[in-house]
View 1 (tube, one colour):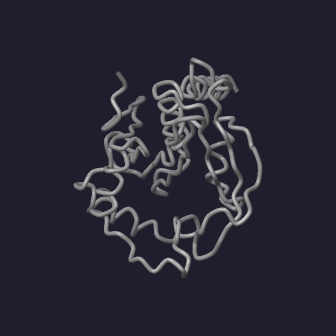
View 2 (view 1 turned 90 degrees about the vertical axis):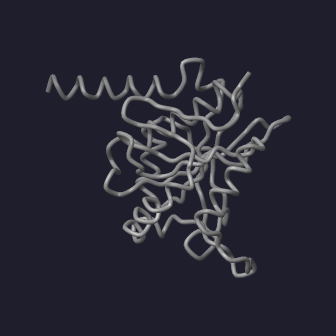
Amino acid sequence: MIRRWPVTLTEGSVGLRPLRHSDVEVWREVRRRNEAWLRPWDATAPSTDTRPLPSFSQMVRLLRAEARAGRCLPFAMTYNGAFVGQLTVGGIQRGSAQCATIGYWIDQRYAGRGITPLAVAMAVDHCVLTRGLHRVEIAIRPENRPSLRVVEKLGLPFEGLRRSFLHIDGDWRDHHIFVALADEIGPRGLVARWLESQQSRESRHTHQ
């Protein structure tokens, strides 16, 4: 029987664990320090949505309820045990769809170390190999080069453009859609593919 939630995933120094109420101080500190780095990619509410933004505690409570209902997986991203970002598997659908979406952000201090690609690979493998989903989507603004590099490194194919798809940084923004399909990932998963690519890269550098 698959344990729905909570779930903790680890691969080497990178981890995905449930977002906790006790993360409030470090979450706020990281978000405050990375405000300019993250603002262009942060979800916002259109003017027609007048509801106040939830507090951190309210956000965690809502995400936990969604996780228990099987509709999302709200992970804290860690590196050597330290909180470095957030990854959320959302929009989980069963029935004829068997799909989900992944969104993520990372502290700029830790960007470029291969943490996010590995975390995304771990989340995709869990969705596909453990939970039996067929399709996992990642939507990225065309201007977001660091995030585009993540899907490029993982070899996820570009599926198409969704115009005015999400309200980001104060307006409706176009997004590129990248997709991981179960039959294309195969039984070994994305993590194995990513680790092999890193080993090959390190080997090439060693012999140069």
